[in-house]
Image (cartoon, rainbow, N blue to C red; front, side, top):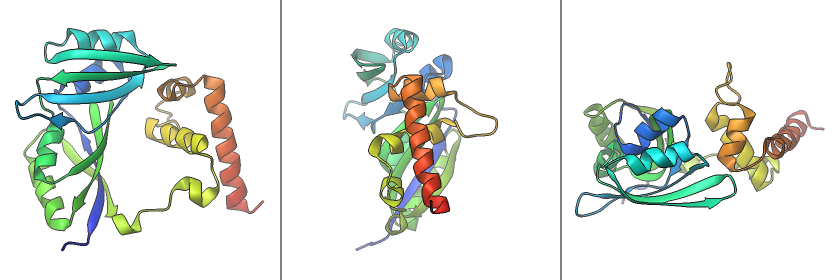
Length: 212
């Protein structure tokens, strides 16, 4: 039995799948569940995004997308559809990557998942080398996975979600890559609600850091 499991994160660029092309054209980020490849070669997709009629229109007009369904809750849309074009992620899955989530942003995809052992990781990266741009951005043993931020610092789940979304969107990058309005829209919140959660989370972290 192989006891070592590695958590990995890879960035995919240059993929021409429908979701990658749609996010490149609209600049609307998409968070997708692991795509499910059917025996007939078609792919079942389920994903969410901030409300954007242009994104919906582009997907609906894409000949590779069939049976597109959109449901709306607040400022976010959830989609379900069938794609006639598999993406690079499926090649990584075939090599042994256990995908947990895929985030598309500006045409690139960030894939998080796990592999069982270094041999499988090497196989995944060898497969990646034969495809469009795939870069291993992070890896660590599952047993060394950091404790959840909320548990370590006493953050509430909404505060943790706001911080994580801000980091992933590049809100704290220099120069800033996403505005508060964009991060708030991705979370389905108003700008003021997002900023309030962010400030409360920062206050909790600073109190823990400085022991106050």
